Length: 224
Image (cartoon, rainbow, N blue to C red; front, side, top):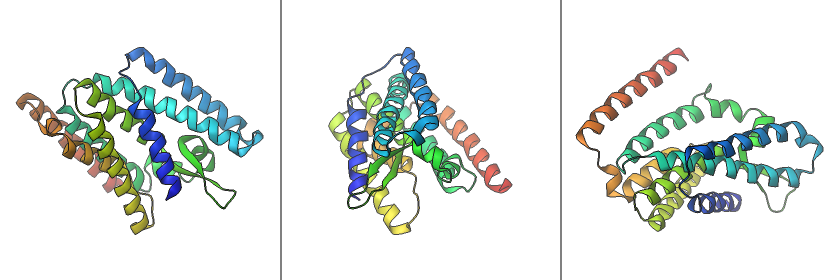
């Protein structure tokens, strides 16, 4: 629980400090991905503490740079409702479906070592994975979008904090990995009335897109 709280705090702090970024900032995200690939190769030759520190810095850089670009590209507050719905569905499928990307990643020690933020567990020599880079990216997306559209950053950070707390409770109750993005999206939409307002044209396009996504999810589940 302490490890989860500490990693959650570093994710929200880094995301809250992320400015609105132009598309060229994706070059920084690309550089971070290259650094992760290098770390995956040399991690076995480095002290575990150093590896954990380098992975943490690199994942925070990757997540916030990508999230800063995407969040700045969100044109209207109401579009956060669509972001919340789509990310919740995709993350739930990724984590809970046996063949989902996240479900596959957590079965590989090498992938876990460079794609999930680690934290040392007090009283042990273990450094365990806690939150994924996707959680960093979406925290940054929501907070940068809130900054762009004049939504309260304090309220947004509080909402995401409660979302992470709800995720932790769900993990403790179910004793399994639980996707955080459904909680993120629900918290942001509930915290900001502006995020629940879609213009009629946007509403129609959103319904079509969500119907298509639902069809894809249903097809994947049936194929399994």
